[in-house]
Length: 206
Image (cartoon, rainbow, N blue to C red; front, side, top):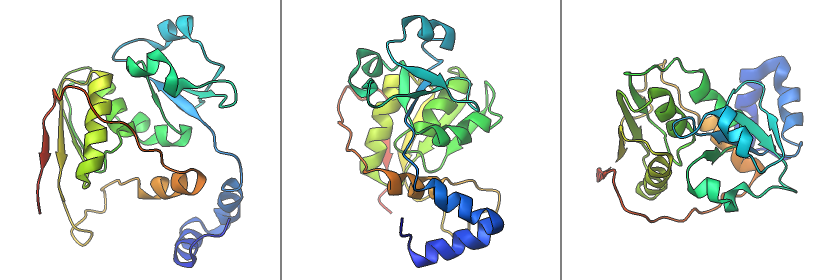
């Protein structure tokens, strides 16, 4: 896979001796996964009604690989009921490892389409506050849809520029690299929008 020169140079600097292993993994087939929505159903209960060919994701207790040649989870009624989120397994990591507890106030600064926010909402168990932001108003609508389907009742969805790169704190965690890598392995699919808007979207026209 041919990478943009600047991106490759940056990754070589960042990864050093591990860069060759990183580059080799980009040539491998993409893994497909689902993450169980523990706000609606436990992992144990879901496995009792599971219609797919699943294998556990080792680093995420509610994450599973599925076989794309055999399973179509995006077309199953359980998907539309919000029992799981379709997500590339490595992308499950950020929200899973964050030490979020019930009652916390959490900001997801690059939230769309909702992979991190839906898991963070599940960790909050309807308590505290989850503020999910995306700079793109159109992507924020997809974020809204996914949080609604998941049953998040303590979420505020906004679409605004919260900071500039010059002002960003060194401790801010933004998953831009993960987004770039996923784009290299697949073509983004536009998701349908609709449904009653129970959570307000605020569009800040900066």
